[in-house]
Length: 270
Picture 1 (tube, rainbow, N blue to C red):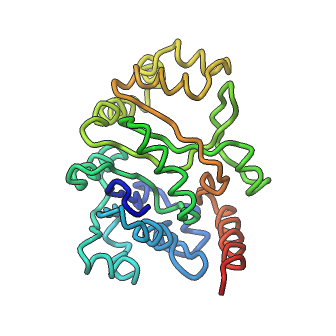
Picture 2 (cartoon, rainbow, N blue to C red):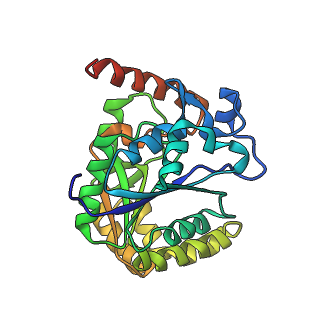
């Protein structure tokens, strides 16, 4: 990515209030982002991948202060260099992303999560190049089912079903500053109505939901309709790397991610 457009990055590493995360419990750590994989906390894998991209000038990690992330070598080094900042998470996901936008100094913002330890150079470049080229205010990364099944045939994922295939989220988003704010405003409205699903249906548009449920929307057509609903341009990038969709949502994912990291290490030149 030499010479690529400069970026900022946001890593969402906070815990859900009032919940004991099952991954953290299985790993024997107080916070999910600290679950060890290949001898290091998950969040360190993510931060190292981002820091390895020279185009990513600023990194903001949102995590509970009690997690002590500043003591991790990967993070301590970047803190000392002034390239990374640590802050507590906000009360909601949309507010956390707003905090990330405030940290960008006008740069496009790449958003990912601390439970995405398989994020690597190949996945990042497969997403960022077309995402930046799209010029859209909001870009969502997705992995097609065929690629995910090839990488991990038995993995359990949530699938988005479109007329041209099924896709799983890749925990990768690109937001272009103020142009993305209408989407965040819409997100806040959805969060406010989370206990009243009928109002969420009204916000999204019944026609949009019926088209999606009927399987008649292609991915491109769905993004066009999302653009009209959210009030800003929205695009999706299909990442042909199945590991892009494998985050650590449940304890079984720890073993899967560990096995994939071990395979990568075996393939790497010594």
